[in-house]
Each structure stands twice: as C-alpha cells, then as structure tokens.
Length: 148
Image (cartoon, rainbow, N blue to C red; front, side, top):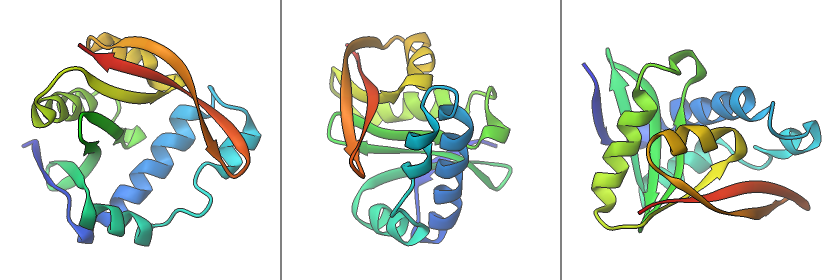
C-alpha cells in the first residue's frame, strides 16, 4: 500500500541513493558528461540527513520500501525523485499531487531538470523560463515551471 509520510533521518541513505540513481539515469541524456560528473560532488547521505532534519521532505513507501521522495519549501517543489526501477508506476505523480496539496497556494513553482519537463507538463505545469544553477563553476540549465 502506498503511503506518503514525513521522511526520517533513518531514511537518509535510501533517499540519497534514490536521488543519485534517478539523476544518473534520468538526466544523463539531457546534460553533458562534464555536468553529470559534478552533479553530486560534495553531497552525501549525511547531508541528506541534515536536510531531512530541517526541511519538509516526504517519502513515499509502497510494500514497506521507499520508492521516492519530494522536498517542499514554501511554494516550491525543490526536488522530486523516484528510483528508476520504479518509474512509470505513478509514484512521481502521487508525490507531485501530495506536494501541491501540502503547499496549498498557487502558483506552485518547480525548477525542473530538462528531462523532467515532460513529466511536469503532463501534470498541468507550464514552462516559464530557462534558468541557470551554478555548481562547481559549471552552469546547469533547468526549466522554471509553475502550476497556476
């Protein structure tokens, strides 16, 4: 049975692994190798534990296994990740709808990786503008999207 709850520090390693796997599999076709090489540089499960302790991070479990998570801050979905082995099972859409309800105001903002734009568009979001996130002296392009 699917359940979305506040993530716990005990889940930090699993959530970090989901983020890394989802990014490596999903983003690789949309970003050059030099960007992929630095994507997770300086990040760790310990860092994820710190985020979980301070922020609104929610994990989705099904069958007792964490399948994905969403990080919400104010009116923004900061990150939404589903393990690649669980793609196309509705987990991402469930997390998105949960986050929208949790946020409770419109517009809901999203910084979507380029590969995630079709996913968010299918859920009713529109592209607003291309933005740059600077990481380790590299520009990473993301699409600012919103749900009105």
